[in-house]
Amino acid sequence: MKYEEFINLKEVKPVYIINGGESFLTTSALKHIESLLNLAYPDFNKVIFTDESYKTANDIVAACQVAPFCDEKRLVVVYDYLNKKNETERKVFLKYFENACSTTCLVFFSTNKSEFFTSLEGKAETLDCEKVTPEFLKVWVKKQVNNLNLDITDGALVKLLDYCNYSITKVDTELNKLKTIYINNTKITEEDIENNVTKDIEYIIFDLTNAICQKNNEKVYSLIEAMLKNKEQPVTIISTISNHFRRLFYVARSEFSNREMAEMLGVKEFAITKYKQQAQNFGQRALKNIYDKCIEVEFMSKNGAMEGTNAVNFLIANILNQ
Image 1 (spheres, rainbow, N blue to C red):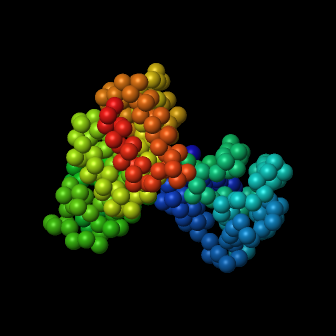
Image 2: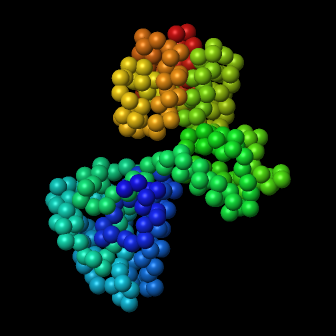
Image 3: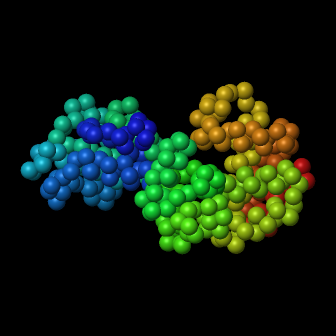
């Protein structure tokens, strides 16, 4: 179930798996479940399990089978199930799912994508807490801005989302920064975004690749210098560049639709359009050569054969020479 659909529900189901990369969404989804349960006696009816607080899946199931005290339901939350991830444990949960206690809401919660939780999908209600749609995010941002008694121009809204790579977690962080800054005329402008919002590294890499296509060496090295000054680790920069050119190479060769490619690459459809535009500036052979060089330099930087900053500059020089 998509987050956008779930957040409008008024009733809870017996078992949920909240599992995804957007920490804002996972946390918000859990809060929504708690608000729907509206526990009057959380000390008795809310049970939290962490990896250190139980031994087996049977401990969790036993907690789910306890009757609620003066509330209609109990809430059992299992954070980051890192222990006993084997078939025996999985079978215990699957058996419970078949006849889950109707007076308990069991929530498996993880802010990271977990293979163990993924193996349970289809047997419980799974909440998709990866990125929301751009349309949902735009409406959400406008609502948050209005709650701050501010306004935002259309251009500033688009720039904010671009800078944050359409991540609601990053957007939330940047809005919290903006609300502490005086905004002239109570309206957030493009200039306010440019001066105060930290660009996501994925956005910077798009900008960097555009500069490479335009042979704008000055801007290329200016962007690299800015990332290093902002404490981005050289190996992170190299890995992000490598991943970017891997996607460009894939998009350049693929005959799949934008939607299919977006699913395969784990990005939104609008990003595929941007990748296609950039890929047209390189031939397939050049993209393959660049990606191979990225892998080579990434390996050298990780095993200590090349110092980080030197590795970044060496990689960029090679890309510019393609």
